[in-house]
Image (cartoon, rainbow, N blue to C red):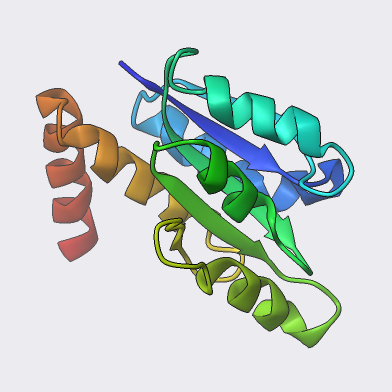
Length: 149
């Protein structure tokens, strides 16, 4: 099964992204958490994105606050699905992060979830992977049935 990378721009975002890693674990999806900054370590970000497919990843979840360019930088260097996770900041309650992530140019899409929506980012990643994984699709069906009840 392909892995999901949960990438945060700063280790201070760990508590916000933890629900994504926890949800992926509940679904049995292998996950690795990384700290990579689009601004402080741009070469590392580019290299990670370029080699992600070869390294066994199927989806990248990129969490960032304020200018929030991490998802866009990753999407510029990979054809894997990228999910942007805006982090609530002290400025504009995360609206700045949301707009930075969602306003991508044509050809460089970044799917975007709600501000601090880590669990939804993970569920979306599972849904993407479930296209080719019937066992994951079954787990999602069970999950949705529990939500309905």
